[in-house]
Length: 447
Image: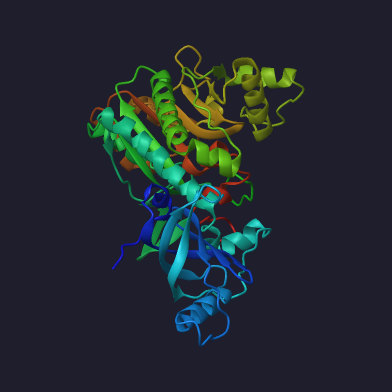
């Protein structure tokens, strides 16, 4: 039996009999010839039935083969899965890959209903309702190939640095950040919470002597938000490392990871991304621009936009404005906003020795949107307890976390980054819904 050939491999295959399988994308049923566009997980190819015979012909010895084949092709519906054996022919005039397959046999493996619920102009909610059909689109297939390449490149950097990969629990006895945006679930006779981030457990690895660690895993936020960049469940890229001098060490690692990831994506998928998304992948130069938050807000103000927030934070429009400024001045898609006020940062961020009102932390902005927060952590138990109290927290409720620091822990820091936001911005998409395998939001738990 002829082995199945992936469509992407047909161009390198010699002319001759091949076997291909995939979904019917289009049928052109002409009087004397039939064309089928077949797509598998690797690409699309044109199938040709030149032996069209619609009625039995006693004078044609192949009538019993040609009539059923013609009828079968005429009745194919969009999305039907078929297996075809036929003769591969290289033909430069064929626009779809320069090859075609002359059909000899066709088997309908699984027929699709004639009324496909997803059309070319279907809105995002309809496409998410039928996500398995939406994912058949070449653009969606490419998204997750890009994701695979990007994450693999990051892993290579971590592994070369001798970092350890960990998997932290997502069921917790207490909040990992704060009790805001927290999902509570029944847990036998008590209750548990879904982890907002692996922050505490990343720091536990520093106390355990692991040194550099990383994790790619789910995180949960009970955020009743419907913006293009928020989800109630998302994939978080996290890393933490010991023996740092400041958050500058974390930013340097962050730069290295982003350059490696984007370089790999550009090399492997650059042409396909340009073709399907109209986006040219830009590999950033190091170092990335760094701007203290207070200075960034002044720059934005000079551009005609004053951040309206009551606290000291930046807002989404401010992020877009400072990114536009950086793009104009430095030609760069990334900018680190540094020196965030202690009032808007978690209690475990280390304070700036020269100005205790500021933290040794940053946000990384990419193409106008924040994708990550990083910092040097406070590792001194007495300082941690004091900072927790300053935030109105009871150190007794943080017992298991604070215990990490009672037996010696090195200086350390790290960051957490949203994978889906990175993909959205990298590929120029309007929403993380487009680049999340199965999106979860306030009103979506299916499929």
